[in-house]
Length: 111
Image 1 (tube, rainbow, N blue to C red):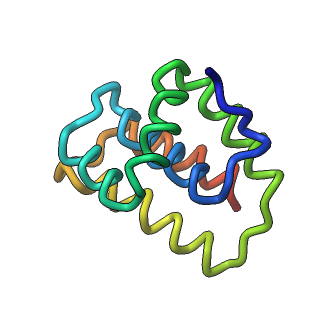
Image 2 (cartoon, one colour):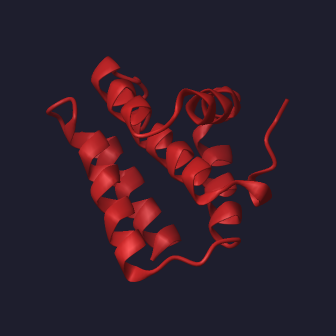
């Protein structure tokens, strides 16, 4: 069952964004997934992960853009989200070109 991204909570949206970051270089590394799992309750993570696994990168970005329009974020919330995005990227000790590209795209969507 697909989740309607227009009804995602901020927490679900954040989980989805972080999952996209983990898969930015085409490989979801264990360190990245463990970090993401640690930030969410298992029910939320599993719900979002099931939906995420059905989407390609383009669909992910479209869903994020649609969902972001349904929430108002403070500067503090956006700053915290950006920090969490980079924490996922750094969790495997590498920052690939693909990860930098996703970061740039997310910056454009979120800010």
